[in-house]
Amino acid sequence: MSVDINLDRVDRIYRPSDKVKGTLVIKTDGGFSHSGISLHMTGVVDLQLSAKSVGLFDAFYNSLKPINICDVKLTIEKTGNLVNGVNEFPFEVDLKPLEGQELFETYHGVYVNITYSLKVDVVRKFFGKNLQKTLEFIVENAPSLGKREPKPETFILNTDSIETSSSKLKNVPDFAIRGLVDSTAVSIDDPLWGHFILEKCEEPIKGVEIQLVRVETVGSTEGFAKEATEIQNIQIADGDVPRGIEIPIHMIFPRLFTCPTVGSRTFKIEFEFNFVLMFPDGRLISKKLPLTLLR
Image (tube, rainbow, N blue to C red; front, side, top):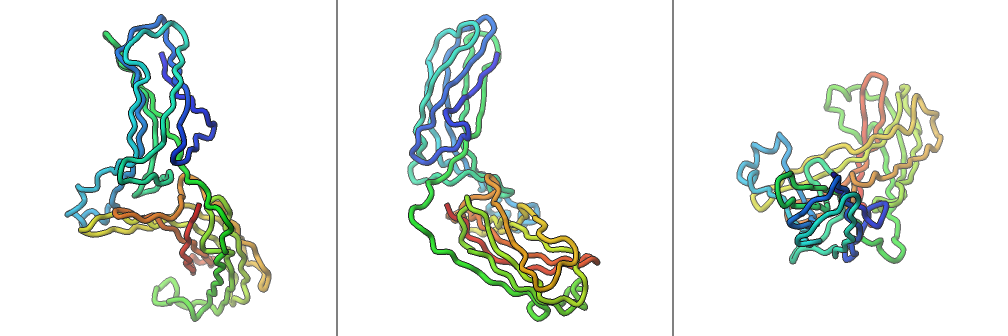
């Protein structure tokens, strides 16, 4: 016996106010009687603190309960019999938030998770374990209409612009990098473009990387905890690159691990772009730029 949820969209992507449509497929060997088939659609924001923040915020650690933003229950069939073989039940549910809530986009983070799912429960009448199936689907907002004005950002990284108090950054060679990203307010569906030029460097370099970092903030009126974690790291130059050559920057935002920048009363999800210059002995010099992701 098995239960499957087949949605009408292969990519499982829906927008607020859409109807989530599909078919429940229940396969049985010999058939059986049931006391109800139900479908439960939920949207939940799960919040948690990092291990180092728990002791600092004991006052509200236990109050970080999941936030229910969507909760719809649908009775497919109150009671009945399932025949031997394949049983199909079409369904349709309105994707709408609970009163006073809003539907945030699906996001899989470290300290913040926003998930939407459908759960089927088939209650068996007599002896036997109930049949259950859960399927996650993805919620995205509609793209904004109209053309956005890009917000290009130039950055300069040189010997005078960095702090050299760390032992790893002592004796930093004379160097200078000039770069540009096409916009710091980027559609999540578009790549981040840009370039950099290594104008000079007294020592050979090992390479250049770019990093995408999420900054998640959780808390309440008692306090907030902010943590930054790396999403992806891309090498864009390997070895001692030529001086004075324009080298492109290109980054695609991974869906599910990113979402449009969001801020609410109890959590925030923000993003940063790091440009990292690496030396053979392990020294790292970086430049951080805040990013605003849009839909």
